[in-house]
Each structure stands twice: as C-alpha cells, then as structure tokens.
Length: 208
Length: 401
Image (cartoon, rainbow over all chains, first blue to last red; front, side, top):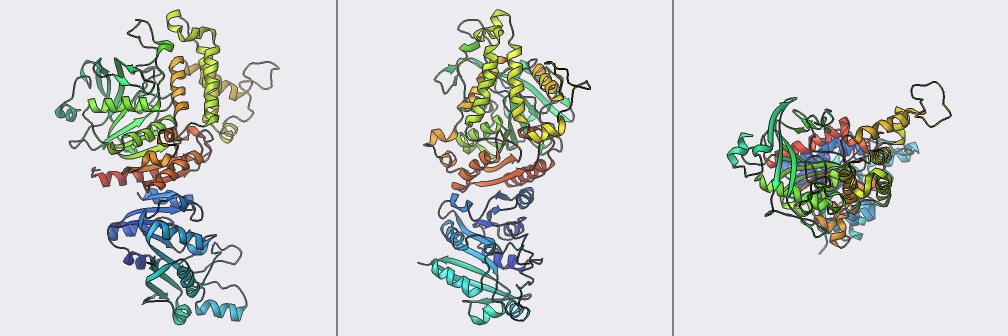
C-alpha cells in the first residue's frame, strides 16, 4: 500500500520510524510495500520482522529480498494474529488507505505492545489553502492523487488522529512531524504542528 | 559422500544397495535402506510394518555440521528421481528447474534427499512387494497408510543416516502435505518449510476425484480384487483412466484452451465416431498410457487414500493453529492463481494458522494459467521468491554460499 500512495522517495519517515524501534525487537509491518522499512529495520535494528502487504507484487518482491511477508489486508487479516504477538506493529502511510481505520488501530493495539503510525496530515496549511483558494480537492507531495483514484479514502488531520488514539486508549509516547525536509520532535500535536506538518510519525502505547 | 562416511554411516544407509554417479553436474547417490524386524514402522492404522525398505536418492554433499540437508517430498505420482534420470522412463527428473547446480535448491550448496514414499512403487515397500506372512505380493493386504506414516518412515531414514535437523523440507501437492506434517510432528527438526500448492486437509472435491480414479481401477476386470500380480494380469486400462481424470485436475481451463482449444488431432474434420478426434483426447490418452508403464495400480489406491485421510487439524481439536503452536521454523507458503485443485484459499488457511501462532511465515501467490501442475514447471517468479526465501534462511542458519 505504501508503494501506491504517490509518496515521494526517499521516505524520510522510514528513518524516523527506525529510530523509534528498540533493537532486537519483534516487529510486524502492516502495509509493508516492497519491504523497504523491514529491510532497513533488519539491517539497522536487527529486528525479527514480519510483513503484511495487500499487493501481490509487493509481497513477492519482499520475499525475494528474504523478508517474511504474507499477502493480506489490514482491514480483514489482522484478526488472525494473537494478542501481544509483537513488540511493535507499524502502520506506515497506510492508515488513510484502510476502510475502517478505527478497527485497524484497535487490532494493532491488541497485537503489538507498541504501535507506530505514520500518516499524511490533511490539516497542513498547503492543503487548507488549496481547498480555500482553488476550491478543489488538494493534491500535495504526500497526497499525489486525484480524488477519484486515490487509495487514501480516510484522510485526517493530526488533531483528528490524536483524538482517535485517545478514544482507543492509546497514549502518544513520542511524535515527530515533518515540515518539508525537516523533522521536529513534539510531545503532543497542537494547532501549530497541525498547521505546519506535512506528515507525522507517532509512537503509541496502551494507556495503563 | 566422503563426509557421510566420515560421519559414520550406519548399516543400511549405503552398503551394497547404493550406487553413485555424476549427472548434469550433480553428485547423485541412489540407495536402498532396509529396516529389519527390530525397526518396524508403526502405522496410524495400528499395524507395525516390518521389514520394509526405503528407496531414496541424494544429491550433493553433507557438510561437516550436517546443517545443509534439504528434504524433498514428492507428490502422488512422483518418485525419488527429483533431479536425475528416471530409470524406468529414461526421462529427466521431475523437478529440474528447482533442483541442481545454481538452482534455488542448489546441489553445490545443499545435501538434498528425496525418498520414495511408503506405499509407493519405486523401491520403497508398497502393495506390490512380497508380504512376508504369505510369501505373495501384499496387494490389498498392505495396510492403509497415511501422510503421517510417510513422514514417520522418512524420519526413520534420516535417523539411520545420522541426520537430525533438516535445513529445509519442501514439496508440492501431496509433497506439501508431508511438509506440513513434518513441520507439525517434528518441528524441532525443521529449520524451514516450503509447502507448495497444498492444503492442511484434503477437500471433499479432491476426495471425489480420487474416488473416481480408484473406481476406474477397481472396475478393470484385470484388477482381480488387487491380486493382479498373482493372476498375471494388469489393470492398465483402469489405471490409465484414473490418470486421465486426475490429469485434468492438474491443469486449468485457460491452459487447456491455450494448448489445445478444439483443435483436431491429425485430421481435418470430425469423424462421427469415438476416435480421439480432438487433440486434448489424444493428449489425455497418451498421459494415461505412459503412466501405466511406471506406476502400480494398487499403489495409486493406497497413496490417494493417504491424501484423502489427511486432515492435520483433526489431531488438534480441529484447530489448525494448534498443529504449529510453538514452532520456530520459518515457512514459505506458495500457491498458484489458476490452481483449482489446491486453490489459494486452501493455502491461505495454512498461512492464517501460522499467523495465529505468530510463526515466521511468507506467503506468495504466483500468477500463472498453468493450474496445479505449475509447481513442476518453469515459473520464474516462484524460483525468484523461493531463492530469496532459501538464501535468507541459509544465511540465518550459517550455511555458506
């Protein structure tokens, strides 16, 4: 899925995610695409990694690289996994392409002790201005599709996402926003982050 | 083979019934292992089969750490000649694209073993061998065997060869069932497992097709209640029909249409008779008639029955995941888009069960119109993905290139 959302390469969010993962942990990457993040995590963080990918091309490419990846759908196939199966479950640039983001996030919380989510921010000022002045659905670097053929069917702003996490009993342990090529660590997304971030990476943990 | 000699090869692992030769860059060893009265095979049906023999082949060399063993499990009508010339037919081995120097199962790197299954007819004890109780061929007195029995016998041979761990167990169709059985019953011995185009239980439709084949054999008057060897007859017609019916299930409508369509065989128009007017008829008849030269009708009955009985979850309260609980093996499940005998959905059930125990599993579905038989054919995407899986497993196991 991450290969299909028109995201410009190289993906800075992959490095940011890698920094959030403790070395040697068990990781499930949901929507792993060609396995770029899993390969990075294996080489840099020595993780025991698995992947789920919707497109068969992505799966076959990942397995050819020696990664443990299965074809599957985040919306339907996460139910198979047992509770606490992984130290981290990663949803990288995928949540906005799922049919039921809330249920997916709920499943991730059940499967992984920690959840890492990276997503584009629909609250970014460029998006807001495009809609305000052009009166058309915005297309940006992180959202490079026309409204009718976009896989991104559930876009949200960082504030929206923070609300959903709160709703599901997930605490934001760490968050990094991207503005252009620069990354900023924040504690919680506020109105300014929501205005300037083009995308963000969240490290989430279950609320005690 | 020197490595085995050094490792101390027990009796029966080589000896007088073993020949060695080089073929197509592969060091081939063809051998027969005998299991005497003190080493019976305890079958699921309660019978202790003894004595029995296992006919097998090895390719390549066992390394000093004995860590490079690849076990190939053959399909229903396969045999131990995976990568060397089949002595009866004179044809090349049945998995030439997969096994050999530089192939995904690289015989320069791995020590490959392929055994004829118990109940088979290529040298391993089966219904056409002599029943020591009567001095006559077993025929229908041969005990009914299961996939688990086949695997148990294979494990006994590996024990005899002094081999503990298998680096990789691989097979398609019925071979894939054996792979699943290995991974479940001997998980501590299996480092990696590649079940291809298979299922954790034989479907009703597949049992139905097998029953058609068995009834064709039994309807042949020369079958003689299975005692055709004693009567000097041969149920070749029944076995050929069984093969023809089964062969259709190995292909796909698209492949049949591409290869044959409605093309006529050596004629310009239909003959208003029951000759093989169509190329597909002629092709199937050929498949049937060549098959009977190399296969035993009773073996066909017994081995199809073993597949029918296979239901891995049944021993685990109906929960397939429990068959793999605690597994540390890595899995790569492979299916084919046009396989309707062991469709992707059957293979996906295996993947779901493995996910449910958080096993290290990969799952690829290969796009092809060649049907179930695709696992035997030249499918570059299958080879590239399996090469990736095997190489990565070999790195993890510390097996050099």
